[in-house]
Length: 133
Image (tube, rainbow, N blue to C red; front, side):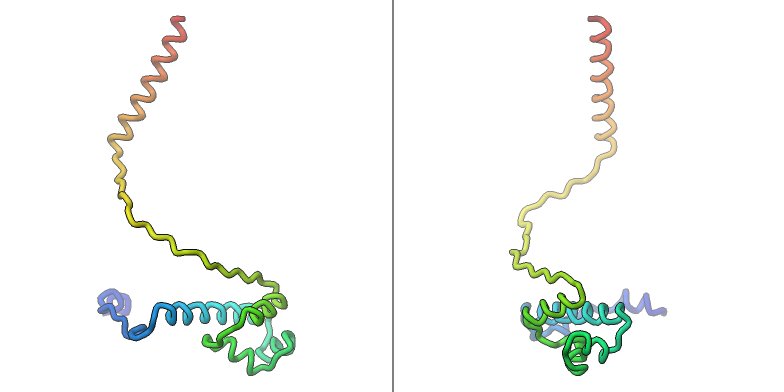
């Protein structure tokens, strides 16, 4: 059995997030995204952590913490980093969109063909009427 089959047949589990609140899970995900983006910028600039630290005016240890996926950034720190590496910081506090009632619509190709035939027949009739007038 290959790895794809093993993954496909794996039992779903929540052991990783068990005991964590929704806020804690979201925080971990967001911190990981921020850290990964900062690291990606550093790598795109072709810098080591030390060079990046010198460029930003911080220690190499601080860059390591930022890239460690767990550093709890302040808005001020994020704005300072973004200013130096030419990124926009966008923070959204939108309410989640929830769809309570929705209808699933299936495409009916036969019905669509009939609709088009009727529409074309009307156009032909209209053209004939113009010719008569």
